[in-house]
Length: 135
Image 1 (cartoon, rainbow, N blue to C red):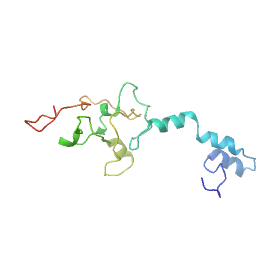
Image 2 (image 1 turned 90 degrees about the vertical axis):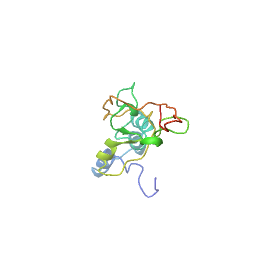
Image 3 (image 1 turned 135 degrees about the horizontal axis):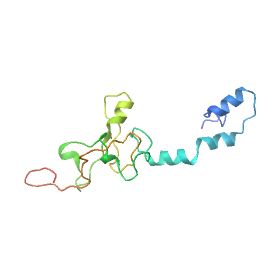
Image 4 (image 1 turned 30 degrees about the horizontal axis):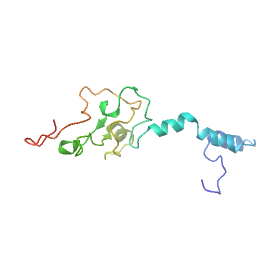
């Protein structure tokens, strides 16, 4: 944090109290920014997800969601046969861009925008030498 800013510059409550002429406890204001729920949510969320990770069904992962889109064709799996990173179409919609968002792993915890995919991609696959496709 830049030294020319007060310690409570990010919290709305502290700013309102300061404008009202009340003394603000900077330590208390910083605690509001690092509540365990917010810190935990940020730790569970991958860059490119539409919302906080872990707010969807706990038994599901992003690859089970209709919004999560893996690469197509031969690039769908890595050389070891593991499902490649994909992107979230809901993230693209909410961020109002046409370009895909940042790619993230298929095992990410689901967010509140989760919608069950009736045919989710498999987590692992083998390359068929005769056809050149994944089986």
